[in-house]
Amino acid sequence: MEILDLFSGDQLRPEYLSINPNGVVPALVHDDNIIIDSSVIIEYLEDINLNLKTLRPKKPENVARMRAMIRYFDEVAGPSVRIPSYNMAFLPHFQDMSEKEFIDLAESKPLRKDFLLRMGRTGFSEKEMNDSMSKIKATCDRMEGWLGESGGPYLLGSDVTFADICIMPVIVRMKDLGKSDLWSSTPLVSEWFELIQSTAIYEKTYCEGSLLSQVYPHLRRS
Ligand SMILES: N[C@@H](CCC(=O)N[C@@H](CS)C(=O)NCC(=O)O)C(=O)O
Image 1 (cartoon, rainbow, N blue to C red):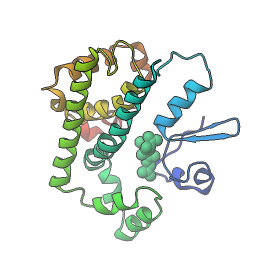
Image 2: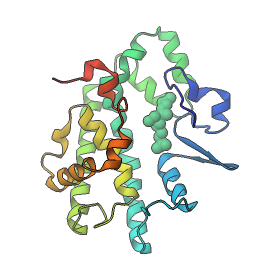
Image 3: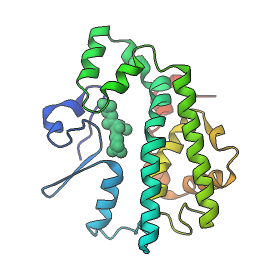
Image 4: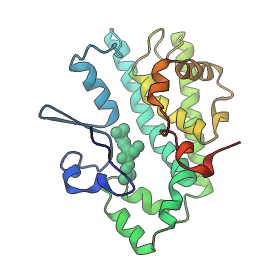
């Protein structure tokens, strides 16, 4: 396993770009296969028979429903969570740069150039922040509906699936940024999140140092 330092630009070095031309993590190299994008990687890990607990439903119609949920998360929640993350946690890294250094950095990002230029060194506007929060709230409302339809406690019913795994980091990030009120009016989402946080595997996943509030002192709340 290789750990990349994203603020040193490890993800933009030619060796890494030859693995993932998008210049983002994660990437998996397994035998001679390169697999990129986290939601693709986790399905691949199931398909190579590592004897892991299955996270894909059995019925094809449920697999389709699960994938449609993941598409929604990637379309709506994924891009939205980046805006408060950058504004509240990462912005100081960019404010320490000169304008030229910042533009050069933005230009070097295959996937995130426009995103960084939109943020600039002053951060995303209040309107962009509010729009992001609305989209994450809309995601919680969708999840509430799905949990109601399936009977929970997971999005597709009694078993945890890739859909739960794909949205979990967004909800964890928002909690870490002090935005738990986004699901205060969606009780099924609150219960879903409590359940996920109570598992042993959650503790392992979010080991010490993996939350932004553990890395950036200014995010710590008393
Ligand atoms: N859809 C991609 C998104 C990957 C992504 O945005 N990764 C971030 C870290 S969470 C990254 O590598 N950022 C590096 C950069 O912006 O230069 C996935 O889920 O794998």
